[in-house]
Amino acid sequence: MIETSRIEKMPGIMVAFDMEDVPSAIRLAEELSAADGNFAIKIGRPLEMQTGKEVISKVRDATDIPIVYDGKIADIPYISAKIAEIAYDAGADAVIMHAFVGADVVREVVNLRGGDVITVIEMTHLGSVEYLENVSEKLIRKTAEIGVDGIVLPATRPERVSALSGLLNSGDGSGGDSETYIISPGIHAQGAEPGDAIANGSDYEVVGRAIYQSEDPKESAEQIYRQAISRLGGV
Ligand code: 6CN
Image (cartoon, rainbow, N blue to C red; front, side, top):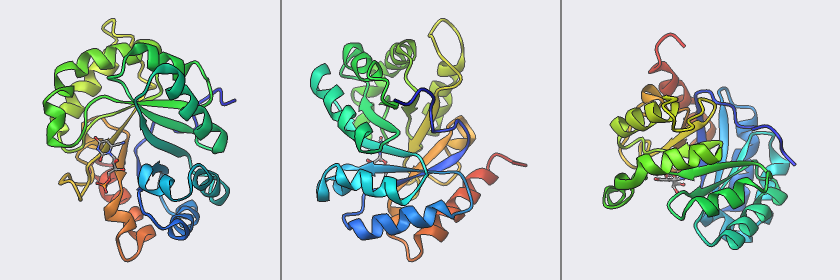
């Protein structure tokens, strides 16, 4: 049972492992262990579907870097908690779930105390504006009140990262906790630039294709890390 978060609230890159090739995933996990920077690994469904939960264990064996299982869990409380439990048991330090399914589902997963819980608040794609943007402030207040460890905000909309991270940390009765870390996808493949989110209050920028599809994934990860950090100025 994990009592404290393994994912530190500090600027870093969370590498999205969405490749469909397991050996290359293991190789990159090993390489990232020796990479210069603050990294975490996010295992997505395209990789998980290759072998199921075993791939989480294999990546766990390959590295000490924090591992997030991104199942974007969004089911009834019992099933959501079951999926999260399987991921934690396989070696994940955190799971990503949707906040929109409701407080009872988020609470059920948090109450497992099996690892970190990261909730999706707003997303990077256009359709996020249709529904999520209308309820995101409420979702943040509710999930902060429950005590989640991290939230997802879109690097593709830095102004939303700025506004919503401010809300998270405002202490205005939202139950906001400055220890809650923010992860933001959308770098390069979806149009954002390294540092767009971090410079606006995010902690980790999530980067997939720009790293795992590059010629030298480790070098790309290090370069994007340096670029993102440099946007903070003097760090
Ligand atoms: O850098 P890429 O566009 O190749 O990958 C982005 C990664 C993917 O794993 C995607 O599932 O970030 C994830 N993501 C998440 C939320 C969101 O709104 N948009 C995303 O792209 C998450 N988690």
